[in-house]
Image 1 (spheres, rainbow, N blue to C red):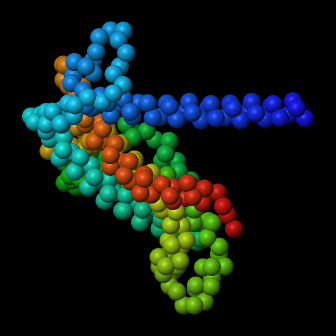
Image 2 (cartoon, rainbow, N blue to C red):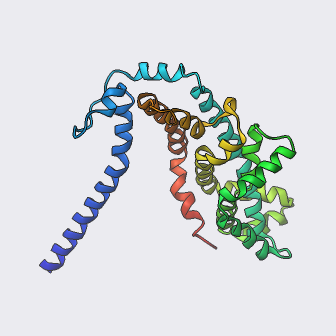
Image 3 (cartoon, rainbow, N blue to C red):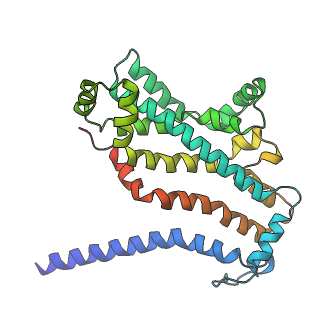
Length: 282
């Protein structure tokens, strides 16, 4: 009995240690980014062998003003561009993915499984291989250097369709049949019955879609020009110089994570429930 209690205590101690270590791996880089954004370039670089500074400085506003004064890119405009693109993309993709997921989960039609497997199969194609064909396509239809060019190609996101299909399967068929008997149309089943039932799943997918579009780099780099750069592309204009301005880069990186943090905090209450919803079936 005594050995069992000691073993349980060791496992519990190891579990707490693992959680603390994992938390530190996540928190420390973000905290150092926060500190570095308040320091001048010389203190960020430091000297060889010296420990990084752990307390914030007073240079944040100077770094932010220097970032605003850059001549080769308007970083703050890129933040607005990213927020606009990611928001529109998230709403549009939520509509398409939820409709597709509802159809795959609750309707029977010819070639249903081959079509679904074909959609999933597109996940194994690297984005790099799609860049040239997509660029030729958007150029031919006159969408080059537009926000539509970086929204539309990924609007029907395969991961989103798969996620919503699994989530929609948790809706009881008896609930839909009861709504049909009350005279609801097929669109009303989707809009008034299915969507409110999978609200947590929609919130979780919103976070995934927003982060996907927010971090998209290669495609916007190819199809957009400087006046419409999004954040990941605008950041490269700071690091691509012969002597990167690390003080401005730290402020830019800190600003870049704020919208993502807001989205996650706003939806975190539903996030875990939404991720687990797909595992629950009738």
